[in-house]
Structures are given as C-alpha cells and as structure tokens.
Amino acid sequence: MIANLMMYQRPQLVGAHNRFWALIRTALRERGIDSPETLSQDAEEFSVWRDPELVLSQTCGMPFRTWLHEDVALVGTPDYGLEGCPPGYYRSALVVRDDDPRDTLDAYRDASFAYNQHFSQSGYAAPYWHLKPRGFWFENRLHTEQHLNSARAVAEGRADIASLDAQSWRLMERYEPFAKQLRVLDWTEPTPGLPLITALKDQSAAIYGAVEQAIKSLGDEDRSLLGVKGIAMIAKENYLAIPNPP
Image 1 (cartoon, one colour):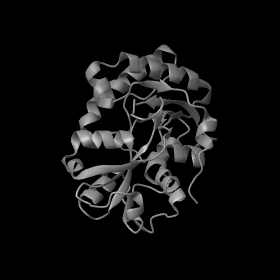
Image 2 (cartoon, rainbow, N blue to C red):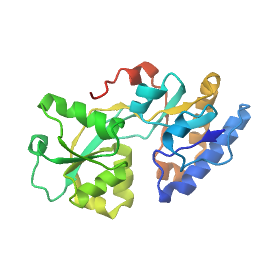
Image 3 (cartoon, rainbow, N blue to C red):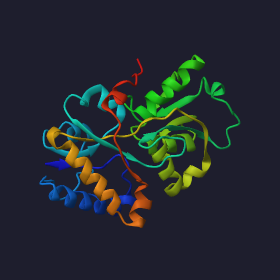
C-alpha cells in the first residue's frame, strides 16, 4: 500500500500533513480500509499515481485527464476556499517582478516564461489557453520542475513571468521572502482543482467519506496551515472536458 499528499508539501507543513493523514487513516480504518502508516511524500509522483495499491494521493488535473483517469478512481477534490473560485476549483496567478514596468500581458509577448512541467494544468495549460485569445504563446521558456522554482526564477531575473497555482502562490506569500519581489499581473479562469485519486475503485466513495471526516476533525491550527476548507465532488467529465495544449 502507498499514499501521499505531496502536491502542497512544504517543510513548514510536514507536521500538519502527518496529523491530517493520521485522521484520514483513523477514518479509513473505521470503514474497513487498510492504509500505510506513513505518507510517501518523497516518492516519484507517477510511481505513486500508477501504483496498483495506491490508497490515496493528490494529482494535477492534466495528468489525471491525460494518463490516469482510466486506471484510478476520482475520490474528490479538496476545497481551499480560493478567492474567485467555486468550491474545489482553482486558478493560476500570472506573476511578474514587482519592479517590472510592463503592466499588460501583451507587453510580455517576447518575455521569458518559467513553468514547472508541460503536464501541469496550472503552470502550463491554464496560461496557454489564457493567452490564446491574445494570439501568442511564449517562445522563450524555462523548465523549472516546481512552481516554487518558477517563482524564484522570476524573482531572481532568470525569467520574466510564471503561472502559479493559486494555493501554491498563497503558501509562497506566507513563507517565501522573495514573494515580496513579485506581483500578480493577471489570473486565469478557474478550473477543477487538484483531485484526490485511488486505485481502490470500489472504495472511492468510502475514501471520500474518510477524507471528509478527517477535514472536519482537523484542529484550527492545522486547518489554517493546510488551507483546506472541505472536499468537493467534481464530476470526472468536468476534468476530461478541459483541453490540453497542443
């Protein structure tokens, strides 16, 4: 068995994630579902998502619709109460350096764009479709592997603009001093947020109930640290309907 909640992990949140998982495990046990004692937070993401004994993980919408949706079951989507988004949805902050005088997206047509992964909904697909009506996509791109690295690249002048998942950006504003050197130039349209998945397809409804129970049982401090407000049920078809960039 394997489980992880790696998408929003940070050193400051290790304890909160571990306590959250302990609550989920208790709720799973009450429903007759076995689970690993600890989270595999440092495991390679696709090895976790494709593991036939995956109990619970959180993925991104683009990998889910592109590669995973036939092999895993959608459990539900955590709701982070993000401004401008329906429950369970998120959007991307297009961030630039605070001292950059350019004040419109069109002015960044020839800019250097930092992105985490080609298969990231928030870091790549969302900005691609946001810019398509403007008739351009960034030709000068820097692959950074993580939202944190993308934001840092902009702050350090190695890139001009990046697209960051709103929850990741909220955590950076809280914990990263360099975030003060950045500002949000624009926001993309909301799309379904990062879904929870399991390989235990016949247990997905029970796992949803366990996660819902655990969220309600979180202490105020951990709830604030993790930013999770609840869990939403967003239809699989809503994820699959979002187009991928070419």
